[in-house]
Length: 179
Picture 1 (spheres, rainbow, N blue to C red):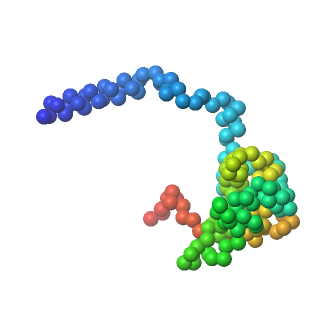
Picture 2: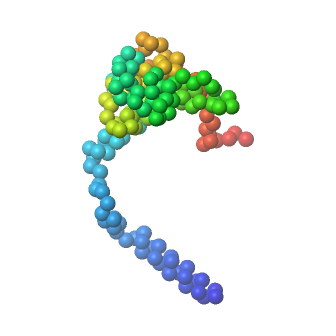
Picture 3: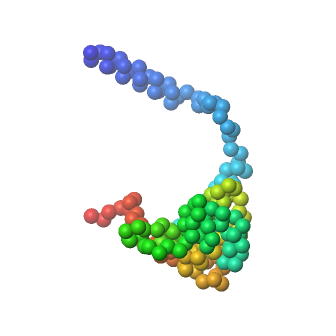
């Protein structure tokens, strides 16, 4: 029995070594390699501290126009929700029995709200909004949640300064314990 286990382990080890040292295969011929231009277009991450925010700007009134054209059909008038999530107007807090997760009650950073909208909205044409349009829609959504003033202009400098109501409501599970 011990000899059989040893031989099996040896065979598996040799197979593993040959797989590691072999040239990578061409793959299953699914899709194609991304071009450098495609990779550059996909590298659009915006971090909580605002790094990665692009040039551009938008305000609440511009954002309302874009929202009515491209967002209202899913998120309802004034972000109250429809076929997609409610974005604003929560009457219950996260600590209530029936919490409402809206931008104002849940989202920790305005910069990552920008990132999410830029990548995935509108649902039927994700990534189709210009940076100025994303700044404007983000401004409108922040306004609907009583986070910024109606006259505020959002850009790379002002957006990273927005303090979200639930910013400190998350626990960093990766933070080192000092115990």
